[in-house]
Length: 337
Ligand SMILES: [Zn+2]
Image 1 (cartoon, rainbow, N blue to C red):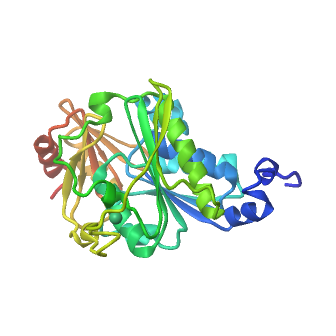
Image 2 (image 1 turned 45 degrees about the horizontal axis):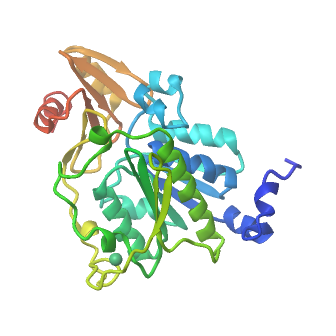
Image 3 (image 1 turned 90 degrees about the horizontal axis):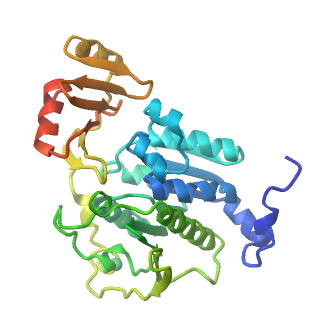
């Protein structure tokens, strides 16, 4: 293309031609492609990063369209994995960027591989467990990451840079499950993740350009009140991660897990070991007991009011329930142990 598509940012004094070259040479991984991941990656691809990796475990559903700006009704009809739908959309916006969509659940067994060779991580997750994992990996390998979170009418962004303070300085221990407010209980204002994603993408660019303006404070926005605050975060003297170098979340052995998904009335089941499921063979098996359809990337199985969506890596999302026991029993009954 002869016309310079980056003429706007080249004129920004802290980016310029040299900053643009740094962005072009950089690779960024976005973990989670819900509302936040959509918003940040939509901007990062326009800044023209060298490569973007979009990692997500989920597929597109109609209620996502309220705030997940990379997806459309066709993606929801086709139950496209979000990482695939996002990668297609982002590539069509900027074909100069290498965009890689990875459909997987991030865990202690695969996060090192997922984050190998990336210069920067942008948080698009919806849960603390994955953020602790990202934090341990990034602190260990000195990769900067940009934390973001949204709830109700508020959101925040915070840069976690080598040397700290880190995410565990902010949240030393994970609160008990069920004790934290979620999007399911508090709702989420459509515009909040767009704003937080925009702040994250901008901070990501500052980090890559080694700008003097990199924010060292937590940026908190409340769109109901219409306020922005920059809050100081102190490094914790006893932080297990950035002070002591104990990466507890990386040491946790991968086990089979079942978690209720934020805002979804669904449970995700993850098998203990890395595996590959032959969806065609499974389709054949399940045809005899219920309604099954192969959606290209995944299998959709319905039986007596229950619905299971099965991914090639053996994960399943059980829809229409947040009862973990029920979800596990449906999984073992129809998919296997
Ligand atoms: Zn720390």
